[in-house]
Length: 383
Image 1 (cartoon, rainbow, N blue to C red):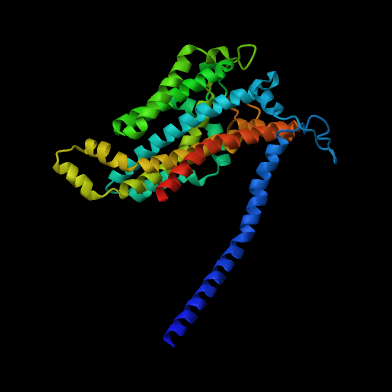
Image 2: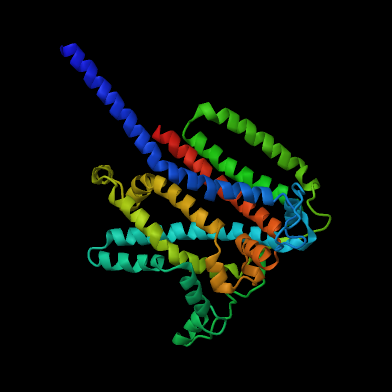
């Protein structure tokens, strides 16, 4: 009797378990369907449209004649004479992303360190530093557009202490630095890859990770040989020189973006500093470590996961930034333009729908190159 009862109970549990699984599947099924249609379906449609000529003739017709052109739209964006603005947009996006992420992390870490050491007023200053994050990018752009006017705002501040006003053109300067030739793009990409691999190789050597050190040295040496041979400089994307670089006008955009997001990184770092075990700090003090050494060798290494997460989040924001640029300098301002702005102009003003789709796909790929490695590493750590 007891055996039959146990078998009966087990059968009931199996039935209930299958029922729960079915209910759970039916619960999330609508979300999966909607996600598949409105996210991945639209991504697939954009990829398809980017390989057509949609927009070259009667784009808004009820029954437009659309033909496939393969990768022609991408070739035009990277090498076409009329798409020089898009190539400068890519340069602007690169410089803006590097400066924005680096300065936001630096300012956020500095603010978190200061707030963590406060004896009184912590809640007040934490709220003040976090306040800009509560504003939308449009509001931030409008405020900083007023503050960065050539004859007012920040340039007017020196006059308060008897100095002449500033003359820096925060948003309208057309001066460029770090100028490079787009025709030799592969050469510069190889140089950047060498720098990244060199830093990674040094970190692997410092950790005495012999398992991965050998193949990294071989790969680095092969890439260095390709770079030194000058093969890449003989590959020309264009038949003429085309100069691009860092526009000084981007400093205004960087300043506004850092002001808004530094409070966010401060909150991340402050939470991380509060989780550092006090026993580690006390042990370092007993061993004779100064406060700076404790901060350098105890606190900062433990904040590395937070730094990586912040880089991914801030990088994602920087790569697809649109509303801040639209509000702070208008979409027609060439020196501060970004790929998302050009995508908007081509799609909704010029009716070049295929070209706009191609830019969207390029942005999607660039963001994926940042997000996917982070997700892969995170999932591996969880496993």
